[in-house]
Length: 158
Image (tube, rainbow, N blue to C red; front, top):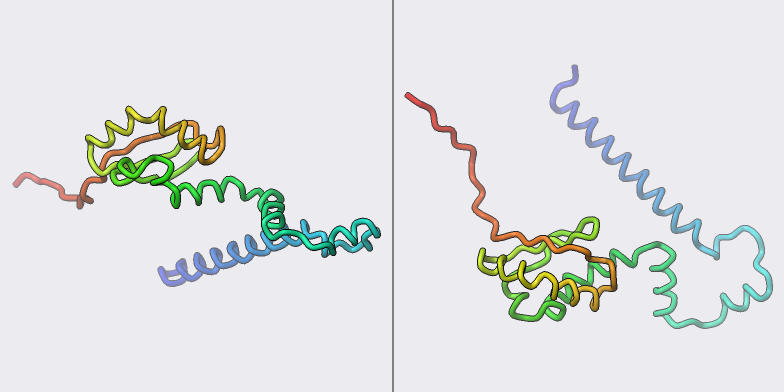
């Protein structure tokens, strides 16, 4: 049986190989979608449209649409625009913590604010729909403040 160092080395090598393979797959996906790498010669109409100048924003929008990054970008903008979406007073007392399968998890800095945010959940969903698009966030889960980390103390009888 390999020792602890041997198992760690095997685990690290496996992780590195998985990362490389994921990077290769991502690169292949990007390259397979690229029109410039097509093997057949483009027709004259296609060639001229590709050579014509285009606005950078249009190119970025096309890339985002082709790669399926719209959700990631919307969620990334959520953290940056949180105070504008929910208002400065609410933003001072809570922040988005996680997002999974349509459920946005928000952490409040006190139990009172957690209760208040639960009461405002409908209004917050409406504001999020306006800012991010309809159907992206379907539910808000509100958590209270995180308590201190507890160490595993065991009480034993003597």
